[in-house]
Amino acid sequence: MTISPAIRRLVRERAQRCCEFCGVSETDTGGLLTIDHYQPISKAGTDHLDNLLYSCTQCNLHKQNYWPQKPTDLFLWNPRFEPASKHFLQLDNGQLHPLTPVGEFTIKRIRLNRLQLIAYRLHKREEAEAVRLLEQYQKLMVVINQLNLHSLRLVDEQAELLLLQQELINLLKGYR
Ligand SMILES: [Zn+2]
Image (cartoon, rainbow, N blue to C red):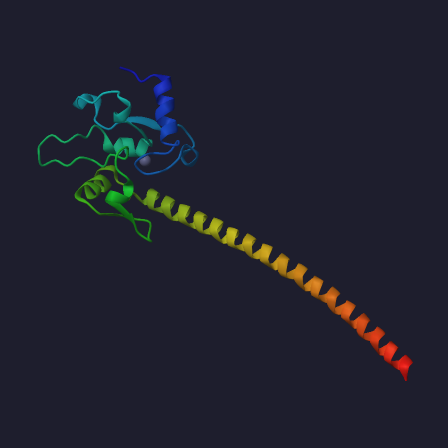
């Protein structure tokens, strides 16, 4: 059965237009991503929404029509039902470190540590850091502006005090 445009749209929006396995977006890849059947149609999977994932072509290509055949075969991570944090830890070098056998198997099968993805994660992290620094800088500028206003007010007050002082001196001179 072919997937209707309405279902495609739903899967796409549900995934926020990003690959549910590796996180790259349509904007990152410059095109639409693919609809993947978590349990392949050829292995008795259905077009039910719970079985559909939005996936980039690379992840889809590596996943192919994998489905456990023997009791000892592992399932792949199902991003629809489990958060990535359950199976993976992102290291400072941009690599994903497996936390579970499913995580380890998924990284190997879908090649979640392919060089381009590692570079992508590092780039995203740098971007996030740049945004964080910019936000900090903007907050700092607000504080500096407030301090400037405050010091201007102090200068005004000081000028007023000097005037009063001068008037007082003149007054005292008059009494002599
Ligand atoms: Zn992907």
